[in-house]
Image 1 (cartoon, helix red, strand yellow):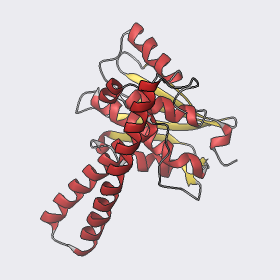
Image 2: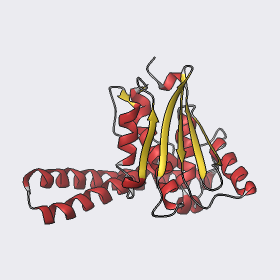
Image 3: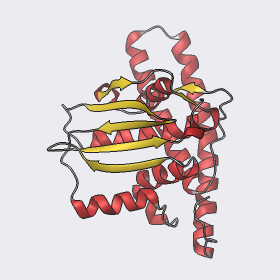
Image 4: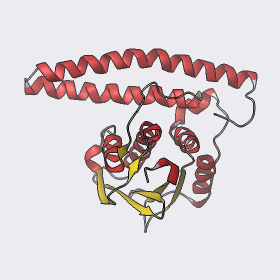
Length: 231
């Protein structure tokens, strides 16, 4: 749910608007992605394929944007996973949705971590938002390091950038928003990444927290509870 309290009339109207806009756009984007997939299979020309791949990425990014609107509206993706997926493949899926994907580097990824089917798509979405943010707020020649470790019956993911950092008060505010999703407003759509992460984490009882990393930069930790993993 978007909020534990009943939404006001204005909030309910905004939620309905986001829901219908997302659903309508998703149908068109899914058709576009299917068309591009067919072009990738039949057109071997390397110059044209470069353009097709770029269009394919933009379409995937548009789909994530639509799904972000759906998350804010309290809805769930129409794409359904029926099988669990290895966490390393979830990480690769999230990285493939980031424009600067070459800057996302994987460090230690513990073996045997498998994500339950209902959490896979939402975790890909959540991680893609965090990867995007880490890349956007760090130097273009720097890398973003991603690691995943098993801790007892849970998994802890760490996403570490080498950006300009965040002030103490701002960091406290962001962590509060990550732990407590805000009421839906139209203005939220202008900077919805953190709200989307907050709602996706709440949906699966994950914990996301930001903290300073070394002399510069920020590390985002994502704790996956036992029920989000195949044990």
